[in-house]
Length: 381
Ligand code: LLP
Image (cartoon, rainbow, N blue to C red; front, side, top):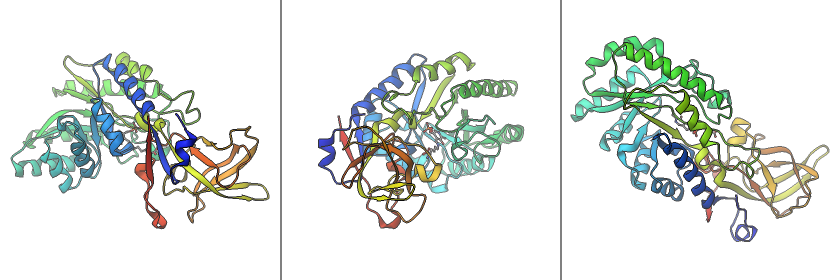
């Protein structure tokens, strides 16, 4: 992404710098590859709910994938079409179910029989019928960080196949539920794309089960999860959408008229932002030099929470990176560290540092811990 030092110097740090041109290019790449197969892509709002970013994504024609009532409200406010909004989450409150019904959304991605019963009751009380997809836990290993693995039986998400006979027996009595499809989401930051082939094979088996039960499914939603290259953000700025969608086209068996839906978050927005921060102090230790910067885990929690790697660079000094620094924030937690032994050129107070690939699950996960100011955003074209 473009990191113009002149613009950066005009803004008080820390802030997220969004490269809108890269965002447009990424979205266009996704659209042209998914259109080849007539796939419907919903943007997973949880990755980034910044208004400017949402506006661009909406204008490109993406649907929305929401996980809270407020995300549904936000999607509507931005102008996403309510017929294109899917609503997932293991713990939908009554108030949130009502918000979704207010807007006649495309689909509740329902995660348990008790939830199905509650949605049925609420819809009945309102004289409505709720369109529902069953979120199924396919027991497929996404081979990613255990905190962002969602498709294993040990995870809290989705309905297990061994519960399905009971559920289908119960379904005819749920008169205010209209079953429109099935939904899967096995995890996030998936870089081994063979995992998606495994998902397709499992979805095919599950489809066979529904065919045997004479249940018709119009929509197959295979979720999100396509990863990005955190190590090489410049050489690999756009995820391999061509291979990703082709895997589904090659391996997913569809019935006539079935529509395939995706819920992509990270791969659409991660590379278009960097967290820009300034070095406050350099502390030379015995073994380690610390570059203490003015952003902390309050602005970007991913390294502290998932030990995730983000490429870090000193953009004020672009000479050879021949020193090592632990790049740490000002928060009173030892986990407030963006990277250990990061290779950088000689680094001093006042230098600008870019923490790359932070457009997804960055600004949106910021907190006010230590009563920190809300992190700002700056946009370049
Ligand atoms: N659909 C569902 C039901 C999801 O739970 C998620 C992400 C997505 C779609 C979008 O997945 P994506 O395409 O972004 O991988 N905060 C973590 C990531 C949590 C992902 C949660 N679910 C992180 O910073 O890595």
